[in-house]
Every structure is written in C-alpha cells, then in structure tokens.
Length: 311
Image (tube, rainbow, N blue to C red; front, side, top):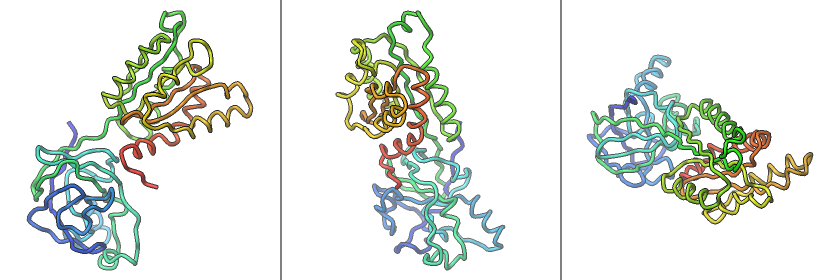
C-alpha cells in the first residue's frame, strides 16, 4: 500500500509572491484554493511543501520557518513530495489533487519570499497540483498517495508469427526497451502484449477497446509497408483525433538518407482519445531505430496530452 500524507497546515495569501498565513481550513475549488492569490493560476493551482523539506532547511540554515512562509498552500508530512511525478494523485473520499509540476523557477532577489527568508526551497522541493475533486481541507486531513501507472499495449501484426511459423521478435523488443525506459524514469507501468494475424477488423476492434480502456500508449509493429497485407496505418488513421506527423517524418528522413528502403515505411503516430499511438515496422532493426527517436519525447507527449505543456 502506498504511503500517504498528513496535512499539517493550510495557508493562503492575498497577493502573489508573498508568504502565506495559516488558516483553519481551505476550500479546494476548480482552479485552486478559494480566496488565494493563485486561484486559477495555470497548472500551478495549489502548492504543497513537505515538513521534511522545511526541517532540513531549518537545520542547514539555523533558521526557524513558520508554516506558509515559503508560500505553500498546503504543508504536509509523511512523504518526500519532490520524489513524486506529474499525474500522480493525492485523494480521500471528499477531494482529489493531481500533481502537475515538481519545483519551479526561482526568481531570486526579485521574490519577496526570498528577501524575507534569505533562501527558498520551493523551486527544488515544492510541488504543484491541480484540483480534480473539490473539498474542504484542514490540518489533520489524511490523503492517500496514488502514483500514476502507465498502461501500455504492444500489438504485433503477423500472419506467420500468429500461426507459430516463427517467433515474434519485434514486439518483445519494444517491451524490453520500454521496461528500461520507464525504470530509468522511475515511473510505474504495465505492459500488455498481443499477437494477431494481419486482420484489419481485429486490429480495429483492439484499438477501439484500448481507447475506451484509457491506455496511455499503444504501439503496433508490422503492416506499415505497401504489400497487399500491409494495412496498419490505414486502420489507425481514421481513429486518430490528431496526427503527429513530425516524429515519423524525421525517422524516415534520418534513416532513409543512407537506406532508401526506409522511406517506404508508412508508419504514423497520433492521438486517439487519451491514448498515444505509434505504428512501427515489423523488424527488430526498425524497432530499434524508431524507438530511439520516439522515447526522446514520449514523456513530454504524455504530459502534453494531459494538459501539462511545460515549454
């Protein structure tokens, strides 16, 4: 069971850039904290700081810090908040917060908080959340911590592999690369692998099911060429809400410059509901080439899809 947090203090301020002051309770509403200066402030609706970070600062600087002095709306204990990730959640029966950002830009001496405390730990160890479910929060409230678990589906299309004539190698290769990637990012994930024949109706049915199930990322491998049984992009494209052409165009140009056959691939990428989908060719070599580029922007794409465009 994941460790939760206990609310030690709830704090508000009338003006931005100033310290906040403890109050008996706060009301979480759409856009942030009712009556607080940062209500409706983009993705940084509610700020949280752990007492663990405050106590560390006090010890290092021999300085007593009061709740709200680093401009946090919510002071917590029980979890190192800066080790959470965007899209993780804090919940109880009455309210729900979703992490949107870890830390922030420090404005240094132009910030009133910096001037009053001589330093600030919010840029490194504070986090920001948005309100998913409104409610009244007060000291003593306990919230459970639910880290985001990314749901991934890998679909291999191959008549011969599905008949057992040879082993599917491209699907397992995608799985291995994703396991390494998410482990390095310290993100939780589940991966489902499906092997099907080159059947457009079967593929369409699976993709529609994935969209309804809210899969985060879907990879297909196979069927991206121009042969009579190559139809994967043709099934995917009508299901897309938005296409992301740049990724596949770049990959084709990068590898096609030396190997013109790479330009024959019709691989596409896009958004289907709340799912990202990438169609890859059916060879291990191509999988390595495509995944090398896709993984560079995968987390950024996921965050953008959830409204966390943090340029």
